[in-house]
Length: 370
Image 1 (tube, rainbow, N blue to C red):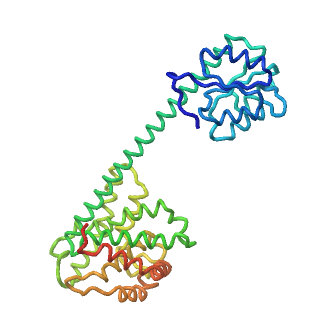
Image 2: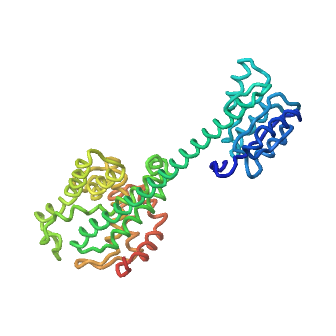
Image 3: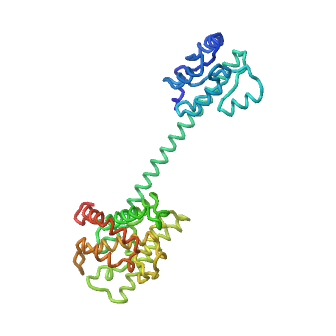
């Protein structure tokens, strides 16, 4: 790519013509105003066009032996390093068809021979000004794009921090920890990566969607905020009425996210996954789960991934009412749930990568700093 024009330094022109008299004439005409490079054939012109400092503009004769101007401009316009250098054709050909062909190849302008000095100076100045403006707009667009990217990153950081704050608020009311959030979102990502090439899931599990799953997973139990403390924190087994209230956390989480979507006047991939996970991660493959008793592929994939991740973490975590399972015991329990609690293919993916779950659990164990 050529550098932006700096008119505090004389622009560089490359003049290409096989006739020495024409080169001398143009050098004398343009020399007082610009830095001028001269080439008497097409090959030399291409060498000088690619050499630093690159020309800001090329005046190119059309009729030259061996390699004519049309051949030269074809190479200039297919080379990324010279494609943006404007080219003015110098030619004695005045037929409309010749001009059309030249413009199709990428010429910026035509100057007829014999050249008129005022016309040459005016056309050169015009093309340099156009190039300067084009470069200015390109630089401005690049600057604005950088600003948008920086602002987007800032908003994503704020969003991610807010998600973790909301999710942590829900978890601190339960007998779980903030690291449960981190573990489960990494489990979900690991499962999704393991299934990314599976024919059942490859269309959905794109890199972008896996990133969205990772970010939305912490909201899986956000609905627990709406469960009364005497039920949420009860050390013993819940009675049937209490269990019915506990199960409402799935709908409460979904409704909270629906309210966000209503406020925004629409949804996006992140909110869709968050809503699916919050509402359906307690469903089971055989239809025995809640809140709707969905079965098989009726359950969103996002929720099927979270279901396995959540169960694994519950199994290896100590609770008032249970001891912590070893990793091996948790793997065996999940194996037994294949086709009943868990999607068989999701379960098989877990069994293939279960050591990654063990490593994630060790990395984010409950005594680790958040």
